[in-house]
Amino acid sequence: METTRRTLLAAFIAAPLAPLSGVAAAAQGTPALPLTRACDDDNAATVEREPGPFFKPNAPLNRDLFADSPRGERITVAGFVVDDRCGPLPGSLVEVWHADENGHYDEQGFRLRGHQFADERGRWWFNTVVPALYPGRTRHFHFKVQRPGGRVLTTQLFFPGEPRNAHDRLFDHSLLMNISDTGDGRFARFDFVV
Image 1 (cartoon, rainbow, N blue to C red):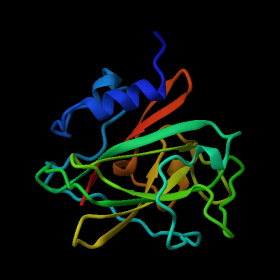
Image 2 (image 1 turned 180 degrees about the vertical axis):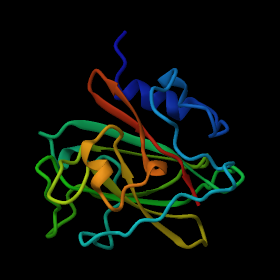
Image 3 (image 1 turned 90 degrees about the horizontal axis):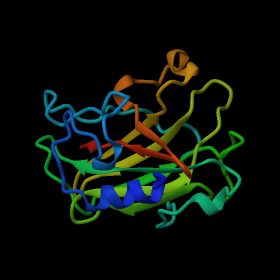
Image 4 (image 1 turned 60 degrees about the horizontal axis):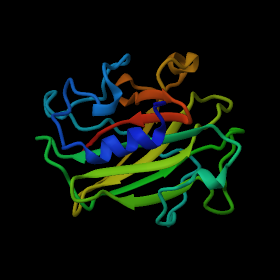
């Protein structure tokens, strides 16, 4: 049976919250990439990054963004929101925005912009497209994450193996997603520690 984004997402949803250090999503097998920063690494919170000039408030409650850019390469981005002791943070706000398959941001409406709230186990996910490169930047997603009653973390997540990573002033290795290729796109995993 061919591995798809849907099967990896189903495995992610079904899996219990595991310690984040040294453990990949159950369906991913042995990771070929370094895992995202673990919450037990010196209680390290996820690194902050600037929002950039294209942030717009009031993005809709929407986790399925693929329809906004149907010619783009599909990707599901998923993870947990946890505290510095690896405890899940249900109800955390997770907001995403990014460029389309041509490297453009929607500045008029809310294409490829959405938010959701982490479920009772701290899980979140978005079905979207791989953003294209544009001048001066490597490939990335923008995120804002806020635990209930907490401050807002603004950051960016990056793709491993991108040649422009080394020249992007906002790039940080700890913000690399763990990505698997599937029969119908990619599946990316990143756990926010807030």
